[in-house]
Length: 169
Image 1: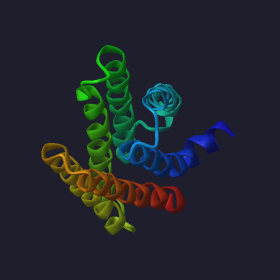
Image 2: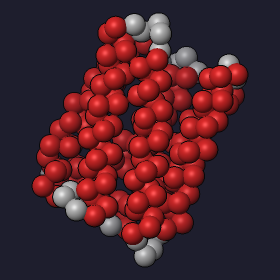
Image 3: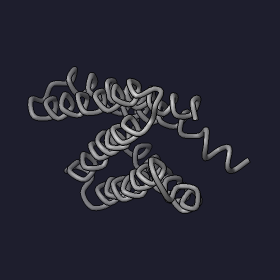
């Protein structure tokens, strides 16, 4: 059962995570809830990295293991940011942008290795990167719609990629 959760869990957790982030962006989620979510994500990611390592030692799975391992560190930076200076937001932004970019790297690698569904992974990478640029532009210009639109693009791109991987493989 635990193996099945590792295989199919991400296809549920990825879209839920991006919906949660979008809800936080519009102020629906309290800061304490975000902190708790980051702690829970850190534990889940670390557990996934440890238990999934034996099955993820080569090829695309190795790349995704590295995304998860680095993502654990990135997520922990958000936890540290909350503990040290929650008003600054710098480390929280590192965590968020890290999770926008890291899966894009995995999608590029997956797209160049697979024979079917290349377009899904290319689209996932493009959605992630365009969303990242839009989000960062929104940060610089203090434009709420750009922040939310960037999150939506990232969420759609990453959800498409993880759903395809779950269904196809």
